[in-house]
Length: 220
Image 1 (cartoon, one colour):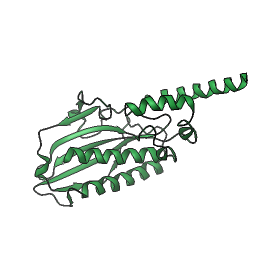
Image 2 (tube, rainbow, N blue to C red; image 1 turned 60 degrees about the horizontal axis):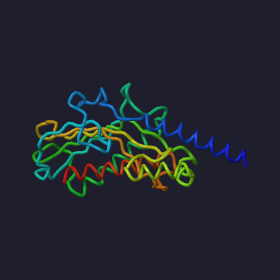
Image 3 (cartoon, helix red, strand yellow; image 1 turned 90 degrees about the vertical axis):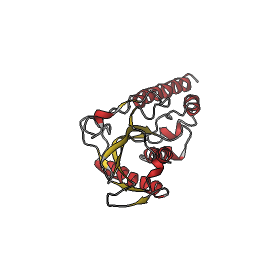
């Protein structure tokens, strides 16, 4: 029995260590993004998902076309990919390209040429964290994990030992190249999204889905 208690204690300790590691990954105003000098702390964002933003008054409804630049994988020294492989970065970039283009297509005609009433959207993948294999899923059922994830779910926070994705969005008026809006954001699935805890990149791709929906909410 003592051995069982000890093992549970060790498991809880491991979970706490993992939580501390995940909590340390937070977006920064990436120095090599073109809009870096414009980004400022977004005090209106209580969620913490969008810590830095630049915005101007824009009537988004006056735009009905959009150019979506190829997703850029950020190579600056302040990237937050950790030791993620180039293959995984490329996989996320490709998913991001398709995901955001699909969402934007529901509201804009996607074009390649600059012109009036056209937005140009630049997406920069700046960081990502993979799921912790097996333990990420098991933490949804472990007692300590259930308590932590319950609290996180209530506050729309990150689940235990699941991944995330960090990226920048820069939106320009295509005809004038004027920067209209820019932000960096960290996105992740709901704390009890079991499906997003299975597979190394599942949480990051789920985060991209949520991010694309958030961008569409901004542009509508």
